[in-house]
Length: 342
Ligand SMILES: [Zn+2]
Ligand SMILES: [Zn+2]
Image (cartoon, rainbow, N blue to C red; front, side):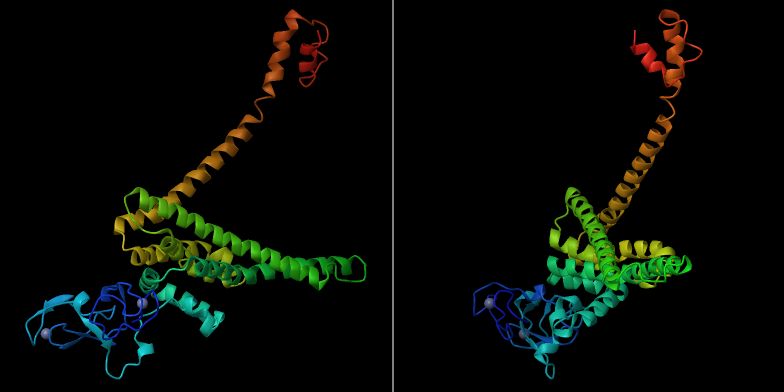
């Protein structure tokens, strides 16, 4: 347990401020591995283990078995349990936050696995520490890994077809694209797809955050954004070339919404109904926008034929008044001219 201001060790500190920098702290702000920390009665020093899933004593307040005094979590003195190394005390973190030490690939795999199997743990870790920049990098990497294989596959097919075209039409089978051009296209394509995933997560986070705030919630932006970013982990299903995007897109999308909701709930501790609203609102909004776009398209395509009948009736109206001769010969397209000329 280290001070969040200066990193000073807060073991065996009876006061509630950091001896080094003076920053206040409460044991309930921390999470530990279960049974890794001893909580000692402030009156007599009797130890109790932190046994619940956050490594804290359960119940939080009780009467000391030795001295009978009131023990309350935030009044107790903490230290690592006997035989537990100081470095092994901390509860789960999102592995991505540790990528500088363990390497980005291991951190990526660990984070995806954690988000798929233990989204609550991801949310709790984000409640402790949510870094928007790291979350953004995770989405972009996730987008590249999820969409990359199919993008490369499609590109390979395109290049293959072009080579085949050339060889079959007698140009000698030379590569149409140099390998550098093909690689360039691959990079651009994958970058656009991964930016697309990032944009999608940002839109989801924006609408979810607005929904939470409008309904009276207090969740901060960075936690909501991080939850939506790490919630995109199920998109890794799309990494199966070709099959993924065409068969698993819906599954990945729905799983992402569910996982994001669970992470968000644990990260922000907002009421369940507000979390559900925050996840449903983007779907409804996107549905409404799609419906609006479709109806606009229908209206404009439905509106296109309507100018045609107008000239047909226009000559009929114009004929009796102005031009009795040309009516039979003049087409509908020429009618506006006939009307405008005299
Ligand atoms: Zn400090
Ligand atoms: Zn006691």
